Amino acid sequence: MSNEDHRPEPPRAPEHRLRRELPQEVPVPATGTARAPDEEQEPGSALSGRGRLVKALWPPRVTRAQLIVALLLFGLGFGLAVQVASNSDGGSALRGARQEDLVRILDELDDRTQRLQDEKQGLEHQRSELENSSDRAEEARKQTAEKERQLGILAGTVAAQGPGITMTIEDTKGTVQADMLLDAIQELRAAGAEAIQVNGVRVVADTYLSDSGKSVSVDGNKISQPYRFKVIGKPQDLEPALNIPGGVVQTLEKEQATVTVERSTKIVVDALRAAKQPDYARSSPQ
Image (tube, rainbow, N blue to C red):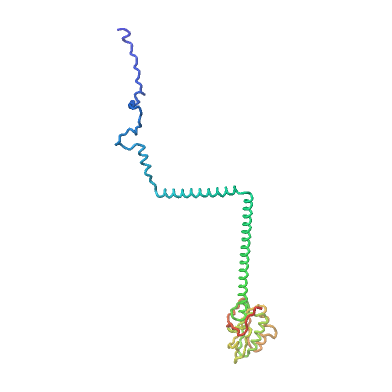
């Protein structure tokens, strides 16, 4: 056997792997124009991609919310368009105006501003006058009420309270007479007494006292001992006025009566007199 018989065979070329992995070529139709895969379907098959798109978009499906939003957007756009057009017309009118017209317009605006400013100042002045008038009227009402209260205290038609004294006269012998009590009232008035009450009877300017047996009557009201005086005034002036030598206290003690005077920071005079309507006298503006 020769050497040629034992020569090894050359290796076979490997089959091209890429060629084997590619799909088989699709023959081109005879018409020469390739069709898309979606267009090659049979008439009775499913809808094509374009058909599905058209079917999805028509007829349109509009909800109520979308319709409302669309109407609002339309109205907003229309309003903006009208506003822009109006501003454009006004601006173009002013741009096209003459210099004399512009000066006249500015003068009219200045005059109107001045008139409005004057009207504002006038209204503010009226408001101030009304406020001051209201304050004066309120102050006048307060003064009138205070004056009425003071006159009511003097006339005995309203109750009163304040610092003062309480004087108690015990007449066990029955020797105290009306004129002695009247002297005590006069002495208290001279010392600055503003309100006096004797055993539940209010003492006023026209009060009178009279003897009634072994007791005393005040304005026709019979009172019995002990005689208790409630007096509103300055205690430092009222008590010394009663205790002066030869004064009220010494006179009553000579009649064997016992007199006690006590100071107090609060004396209540609550006995009232009925207000009398004068028959002839009337108030005068002067």
